[in-house]
Image 1 (tube, rainbow, N blue to C red):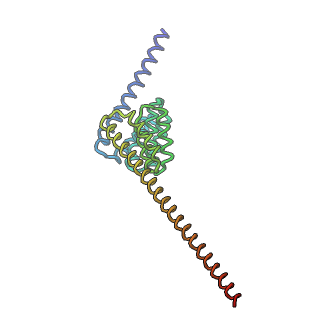
Image 2 (cartoon, rainbow, N blue to C red):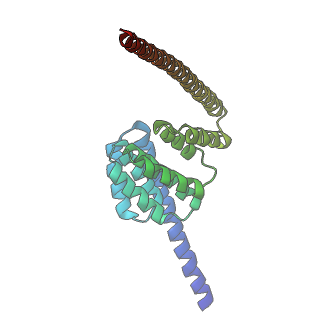
Image 3 (cartoon, rainbow, N blue to C red):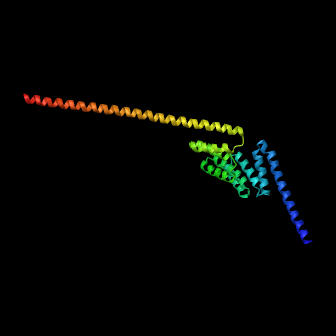
Length: 233
């Protein structure tokens, strides 16, 4: 009898918890449908703040709240919200997505090196994410680190599932590699021409130096002849 009663209590607790979770998900979906779809970010912010007071450990709520704050360009607050989401999230794959979003906010703040660190963590936690490699490539491109940019973009291509985007990135990589090769050849050609000009000027200088020495020798010889002529008088 006690065992049956105990089982009923556990079942009741499970149903209450399940209903609460379903209800919470419904509320979040309602906020998405009502505000996110129409870019009503301030309204979404207010609703999520109310929701988080009732469900303070829901990682999805903090994730959505971080998205809203980023849209409002409140990057510092977005970073705090995403870190809360990471703290409450149990899935490594979802944590990987959260670190990617975290990296985007640091990138928007101009903290590129920190953003790259977040993208690296994201890839380590979720190795099927393609976008961290894409954004890292953009950062390396902006930092004038072409080899790193190309490596990141090539990794993106291996993971990307969208055929059109993969082909577009492959064209970008090919054009960029050609541009780098052309620039390398141009620099080498300029260097070769400068060396040729320098060698030419050095030879001309050596020739002028030889002529100068010859003139000095002629002057000395003429002076010696003059002295001998004076001695004959």
